[in-house]
Image (tube, rainbow, N blue to C red; front, top):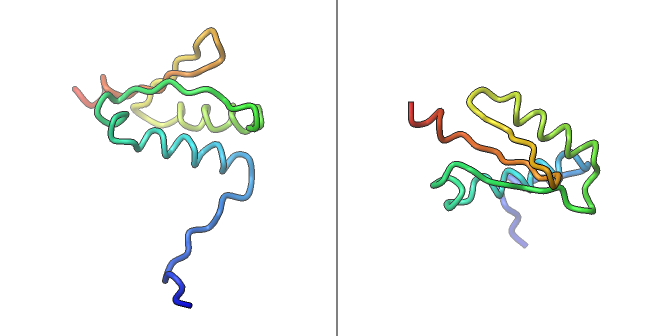
Length: 83
């Protein structure tokens, strides 16, 4: 059996799982085109991990986080790219 030269490690904790899911969503071509996405925490995701990931994303220069009434968040960065 041939093994890939650099195996991709599987996320091990809830923070990593949330982070990987949001990373996949944000990296999608459609989201990259509009530079805005609304996401919600899934029931199987830790509320603490969710809050920490959202906070870490919000601490990134050029990223805007808007907390919506239904618990979702809107992540955007268009205004910074248009400057």
